[in-house]
Length: 182
Picture (cartoon, rainbow, N blue to C red):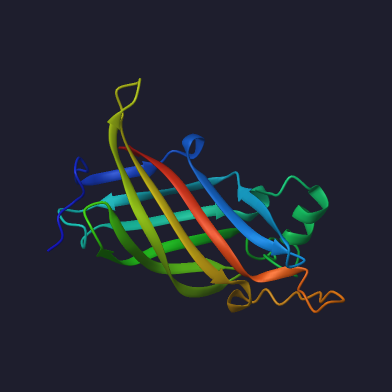
């Protein structure tokens, strides 16, 4: 049995989209990093009496993707990548939590993008609990995982003259979440 992190109590904790981020990073032309994020995210953590009995669900609206470049954003929404018209949401549903220390754990679950579901493990860090100015209990989590976009049916490949891919296959996903106790 794994104890809950210090200050975290059982119950529903909702993602506060105003104080949370879902970002991703890809290599461009093999030399630089391009970052983007989803502006419309939602989800919750159902904290059980133990860490093992806790669950996480989350989603992002693909239409809310932004990389600060409208042309690139449109391409990411197209059939080459997310195919937003037929797959408007990215979803995550946890299947297990493995403690590493009191504030670090692995969050294992099913990530669905473009209609394809794969198991993904997020290295997760719990950053504590506080009371915000409105007297709400809030908690913080950071999580990161690396996925291969081709595993999710994103087959677009443009190979440059030196053999580099225009867009890397490996994509780093990072979440900075503030949760509010319901």
